[in-house]
Length: 248
Image (cartoon, rainbow, N blue to C red; front, side):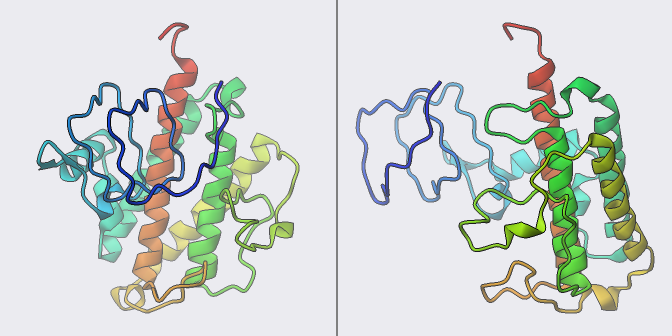
């Protein structure tokens, strides 16, 4: 097993005839990297923000191709970009149905299992509670302290100065996680049931603070949908690895 390391900044560096075979890059900035005459057999790239930019392979921007394939695999995913109340409502229904299927299909002995350096299903559901709290209760509803103590905060939050005392340090029972998750899902359902185009256009502050971005209410809902679809993909990816026959 290799140990993660922080070896510094390589911005602008050039590597020639260097082997990175088997290397693992996590939370690294590889934007603008140029690779020529490289062996990429088995190269595995996972980027939540892929659709915000370009990824050029042999002169072809493959981002639209990846997006189209993910939308095919996850029906309704394309609605995470919806601009209308009806579109957002339909998108929310689609992703919740997909999540219901995934949770039901996960063997009870695997809800706390995880692939190396990834969250378990239980932790993922706790993070989605946090995402809903941040963008619905904090961003849209402007609740001063919107977070449930069960929420799973992102890695590095403590170093960023976030108040970690809000959250529990023990491991909640899965039944408790499902109950809180269901409450948050219903909050989004109830909000979308009566939301109007005018309300979607209203501006809010970024619930995580900083920067000049002031999302609209619609933007906040779209972030929730993006979080739901992204973590569903991660959960299904990891479940497939955890249930694969030995040797595969």
